[in-house]
Length: 68
Image (cartoon, rainbow, N blue to C red; front, side):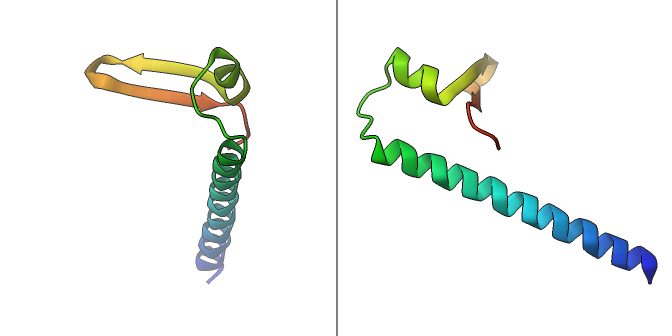
C-alpha cells in the first residue's frame, strides 16, 4: 500500500510539474503574440532564445530564455 501511495505522490508531482511547464509555454506564446513581433530580428532572438542547435536531417533544438 505504501509503495502505491509513493507512486501516486510521484505521479501527482510530475503532473503538477508538467502543468506548470505548459503554463509557462502558454505564457510565453501570449507574450510573443502581445508584443506584435512581425519578424525574427537579432533583438527578438536575443530576448526569447538562449541557444539554437541544428542537426543533420533538418532537426533543430531551441533553448528558450525562460524557465521551462
